[in-house]
Length: 368
Image (cartoon, rainbow, N blue to C red):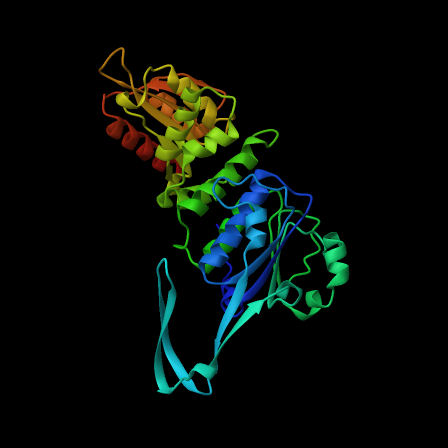
């Protein structure tokens, strides 16, 4: 995960923000990223205009572009010469919206307050954020008609293309990464705790959809999703979107896996230990592993432990690693066979917790 302090500085010092997207991009990953940025900036109290194709609507729970672009903005202005305001808060109900001001000094009269409705202010924003725009010329007619603002205003340039021309004051460029992961890094730079269920669900959806549709090994960057998990992303809703034609039982198994997957950072290891009551039948372990080893994402180093129903005495386990020494160490300890970067073994106890700790200690002996 990447944090860029300069992003926070630019967002903090500018109020009117123009968020520009590529009219041709409509992938779930791209839309989840740009809608999450829009949503977060609005949550921070920014006045934001988003330019996207009206037909683009693939996000999980954010409003469609049509609704977004119908939002109107206004500025309530108080002349600071009359009185210096130290605090502002408001109360909102079904009837009205009241602002309460605390004055540090002086006084404010009615004539010192004005309301400005912002019409077409996107032609003169304070800050521009471009998402997935390799060059300014890719903005087409909008750039030609408003080219001055692109030289007069700071630009934050976010893209996953190695061919991006890096024309921004800040360039957040990571090639071959999900847009939703870049949006996560952007938002985290503003505030690590600003995420909520809406952004957590949409960004997780974008990241997982990107890797699901990737050709070859789906080496998913799961760090962002592990951070987002504490904000309650709806993995069931996500998998209903990504796997619309799969059996409900398979999607439920995938959601269970994502909700309960742990990451042991010191060992760079993903681990899952479903209890007996989590699985209707032991055969579900096979489907669970398939989801985590290529069908949905690809986790190169994975430990899955489960309670063996047949014996009732021992736990079962499978361990995958690109490091053959690690696979061999686990196989030797449990007197099991190793094959193509994995070992399938029976534990020496019926306790999943004890088996897991034994394996962690064996891996520590190799790595430290």
